[in-house]
Image (cartoon, rainbow, N blue to C red; front, side, top):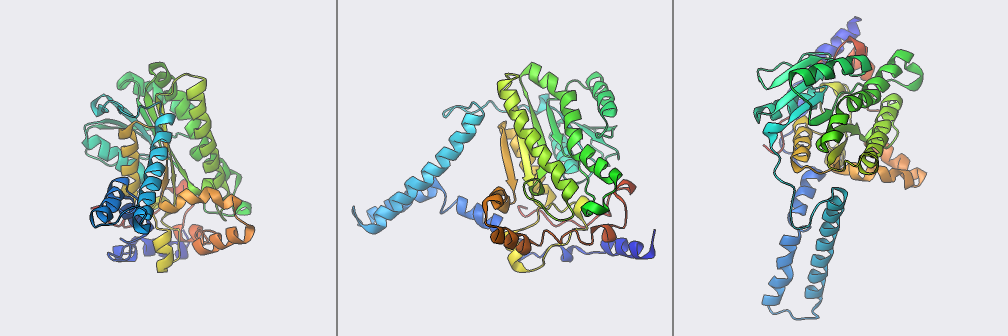
Length: 387
């Protein structure tokens, strides 16, 4: 290893948590603001009392304040009703009765890439609930939880997935949930990518999903029950420099997920096999430890990085709800698909503000390794904002 690379790795290892976490500013961002507003100004229950308050204070129709507050209640209530009905329609739900409570004791959850990052958090959290968890990874998971079973498996290779899948069925039974979390990133420009780099990215980020689905989906269809979680990225919806291979692999995953949903509904007649797609922004895991974002408060407020535990909790909550859905994280991810209809100058402005085309400029130098040489050095993680 070159001396410069060794120094950069040492610098990453010696970073303190204060470099990543500010207890005042990093706790306050647009996601927190929207969460507060969703329980106040955008909450049907909360806004329902506003016109009542003005009415009992003496306002009578058509007083402007009473008209406006009533219109606001109707608008907010209609929005949430349509949003909720849309989810019920997708999941063949009932307006009056929800699905039966999920019995976690009957679940067998397979997690790819479960030895680090978000996958490790999901695995350990579920195992604490006495859920039987299977981790598929090339590296073993470091845990003392006896509910977690590790199988060494390169999920990018169909032969290994097929072999391990048969072993899992023989040892533990048929999986009821699958979390496709494994992923790699190269952080290189198109011309700097070697054929091996491209092959690795597509194999792990896209083909591995085909292999795990072919291995575990047939039994779910047969039982007409199960849940599949695919972890994608905002880079799969919009192009960014130095992410040509990664973005293409994640875009393919998004389309795979959507096509699978319609096959389950209309081909296999198994709509009760649920599918959840996670479209996430930057997650502070070792995989993206060398990514550099703008440090100004404007960026931190509108484009916050995700704490891994928040993503893990969202995945577990989606499994618990037993609904097929798409999770956009953080809040700005909801608007990324609309960048394609923006005028070119607004699209370029968005790219410039976020700095996404330069975030991986020093990725290879800072990480000091080729991807096949192992995971990036560990980076101190900030505390869970909800703690």
